[in-house]
Length: 361
Image (cartoon, rainbow, N blue to C red; front, side, top):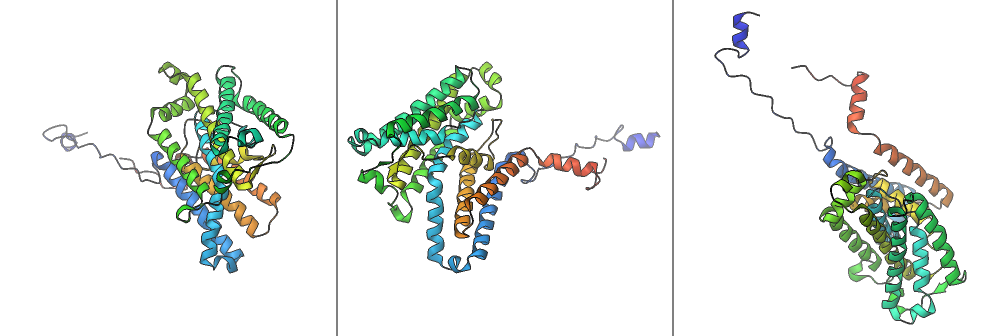
């Protein structure tokens, strides 16, 4: 290399070339914006479902009043599942799973609608439902945290036991709710918004604050991401795990009152397969099954998407079997998408010459 070239390169008499400025990552590539992209995608799915409904039944969707009322129906149907999905999201983010939520709703509802409990009025019914849910959740948490049982096994055992206890308490009979206040929750519409939807929004709002603005939420994410590192950092992993399952049980107790209001009754067979709907909604919303990541807003969108699908199938007079197959396919696709990152797609494209290579500097 000549001396002139050395001078040009900044070796003599010139300041070195400044380092290239860091390029900003666009929001659709930024990992931190993944939840935003997913939520926008779910909004797109809802719009697509609306368009499909308008295509199938233009006679209904041309009526603005019917459309507004149908949206309220969708939200009302999603309310109870949405509440338990909030609790499920916390459990999954914390590295666990809760298969017992449907059974806990049945047990809480049956216990709250016994004649003895109803004699204490609506306060007694609500307290009983919530207490039963929290108590069963603490049992789940103790089995997982201190009994060292796999969450799948512990909550599966609770599912069977809770269904059996609910059948024992009710005598396998439907128990009618005679309380006017409880029954009116499903029909009350402050400012035109169903009360059950308001309850869902309140629970989801409190869940969002708890997850994103408190130490409890940060510890939940830390435990789900790496429980051993969380323990070494001074977090009481066992105690926190019990609280997560207690929170899930609390949500089950609230949902039990909501379902009792909708049906004005409760039975041991209530809320069957709700656990699958809650898990699916959380996954659709971006919660990782392996733990450590998830959002309340995304889970809420996931619940609404499933409720909208159910509503669309009802409007189109399609059988429940087809609806379940579609839900299963959505769950599989959602899990597969969780495993695919933008960077993986980009690397694949570059390896196969589908994109231009970056110029060498």
